[in-house]
Length: 571
Ligand code: ATP
Ligand code: MG
Ligand code: MG
Ligand code: MG
Image (cartoon, rainbow, N blue to C red):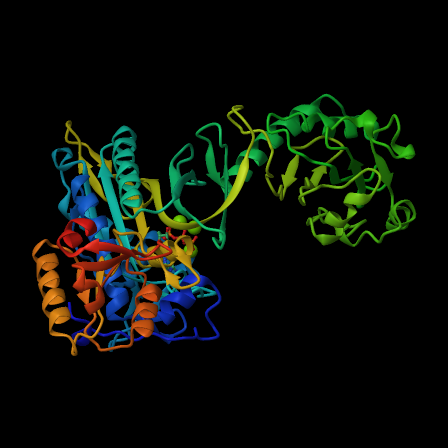
């Protein structure tokens, strides 16, 4: 490609609505152009990167045995009504009407359509398993589109759907996709982590998200550096909720008496395998005298969770304060209990860990370090199922649920998601196959998404410097840029660089020759901003000694290279 015939449009400043690095750099590098909120034109430079992402995805999907088709963007509402998603999806689902007043959805994913394909095309167990995928435009009317391609409304997704005879088959198809995703994200050259995600539909390890690690990521990932445990925050908390529910119930069954015993029951909770660094617990219990009221119990513990180490005098031997009202709290702590929520009402007290609580860390008894609270624990006198609501914040240093170390937390950008769907869609849409006995069975489904356009943002969040983007080789719009010093002035330069350009092209290298006649400073700044991995500069001065200059995008200085070695140097 010759730069003079390509389209390059760079900016010194990013538009003011660009908040994060990737958005700013993509705008400055002329990769995307905003058309409306969350809607972008993929400009030629950006589109080249998207095509690289797609090519890798497509290659690995095909290698895994998945079959490509292409389902429509505009889909009849009837299909969406069959599964109930027409109503369930709410405002995120973009709806349009045709000239006859018929309703359509603009696809946010394609479960309905692919299930419709399956119910008409897949008749026999002999046709299974099969995995259909497409790379297609999606539309989600996101509440907060932002960060450029990261959370767009219109975006490109690869979505795949597997069909199996039974759960065993699904688990195999799922594993094949999981492995393909590992290959895909490895080939992108990105640092990523697969984490367990919550899967309400089937349970177990039925869902994983793939995250690119980046400080600006919207998701918190919980993992154990010394074992394989990794989950997104919701899934990690779900485990915590489950464990503590069971433990709370068990602890409560040992005691029906309020007061000290209940506090001790709570203390027992803290001996969970998770070993959270809880330092305080707020819970609501029924008022013994007046069932219409709640009492607030505040149990303050030190980091080691040992009740007898709690310093405050009033706690000695008891393990907890008993607060009947707000005044008592103010009296004891000198701080209004704004964080305690409504007291004396029938509503379960919902205590949200906030700054007020975090600021309590310098109280004698200490409060939770990292906003960790059990909240809304609501135990009635006759011990119904304990309701452990709103357990928040699995924190760094907690024991890993697998018992093999402590947990660490990092932030990630969700770039892929694999999910065992089960038969929810096939049952709703009556998509069956005939088994060996000629009996109809619901198709067992899995779905697998990759955010193709989001990958660009995620890759940049992980790879940039003050000059611009640093594309991993596999995603770069061009692998090499050739920069002539005086293309129109020096015949020697023109001859040598044209020759090298042809050689690189013949060798199948994605090369761009910058023949725009820009000054060297501006030319270099452009390519550094765009993030091309290799740069070769050819000028008269070097040519005298038979040399050219090579600089890798991460190199701090150029290296002189003999002209004859230029080709081998790049490869
Ligand atoms: P998120 O949690 O970021 O909203 P999601 O869980 O809703 O994503 P999925 O339904 O799992 O997304 O879709 C599969 C993939 O599509 C996601 O892993 C993500 O990479 C990508 N994706 C989802 N929403 C968007 C969006 N608004 N813009 C760009 N990519 C998106
Ligand atoms: Mg979403
Ligand atoms: Mg998500
Ligand atoms: Mg998801």
